[in-house]
Picture: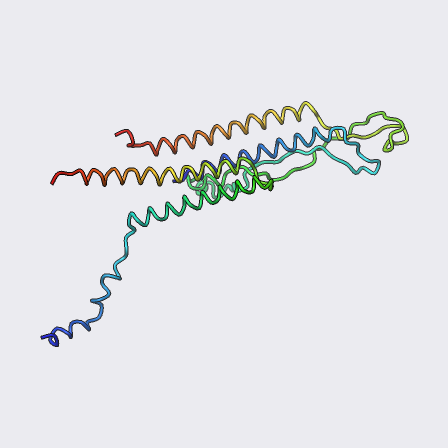
Length: 147
Length: 96
């Protein structure tokens, strides 16, 4: 029974999508967290997901059925987005600079909502794929049970 | 009389023929390994469930996947057992 491969692939996909969701939610949660005057504070993050095991010289060897699970996606890293902080005029705020501006992370709320929705849909897709694999396995166990 | 054949008993190799033959894996062996696998899968699922209940950091989908894996493995063993039992009952019902 090699249904573990199907489960492992779908499980890896779910793990990636869960991490993407977590990072998007973290960005949204930190959208108004003030960055200190010394520059210490939250920067919007994004997820790098990919297949680590992919190497071109061995492609023909790697593309074997029993190697499929090693192609499953992995989180390769969580990196800071290259966006500058937003400036908000809040005179009197303890962290405000000389001109009365406070810095908050440059979170793109629209983009993060989009990330949440795509992560949710992709997670659902992985669940559907896993359920389909389970149905196939159970159908295989049904072979011959009719007689 | 016994002395005359006793010499053959010392011939090398005769006694080892049976043990030297490569032992083919029997159905019992297969059933036993699959049962062990099913038992291990159920134990894994149990461990994961306990972690979840104890609020330890374990991904929910990992728990569900291990439960489903255990269920499938157990269903495989059960179905094989059903088929074998059917065959056995067919033999019992055979007219002689």
